[in-house]
Picture 1 (spheres, rainbow, N blue to C red):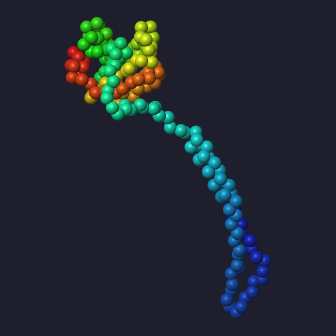
Picture 2 (picture 1 turned 180 degrees about the horizontal axis):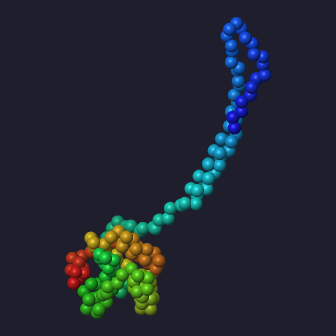
Picture 3 (picture 1 turned 90 degrees about the vertical axis):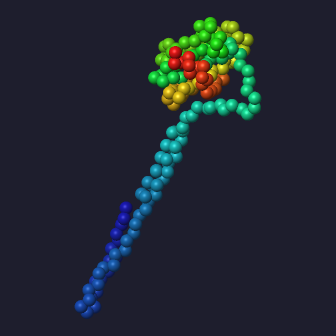
Length: 178
């Protein structure tokens, strides 16, 4: 708060000139310093509370590709209008055995349920169990970015340790059109 101190003095007139009173001004900066410390404290607390959350994304290592067993692979094809197509193992084998299907992102009968069923089957029949499952995500040009993020969220929710985003083949494109 600013204070004005008036010096008690006599008004002297010299001749016809009249002098103004000289006032001494004193500005108290204590409230301004208090406000500064309050703002600094607020910004320290606010920055610690709003930490960004990001998903860890494993990138492939340099070198030769590895072979993947047909029993351990689940391939998901992301199409337009939130449609998903999936098959187990190799494409030609899964078409012969009827291991190909169409699903969506719903909670009850969606892709999450397919992933969980695959994990349970791998626990029963595969020597490495669900840890050996590989999820191949193949988005089409019509799939939105949101669809790919939803698939990555499903990998995180279902604790899929191995997954990859791969380009879709011509045979898979043809199959999706049919």
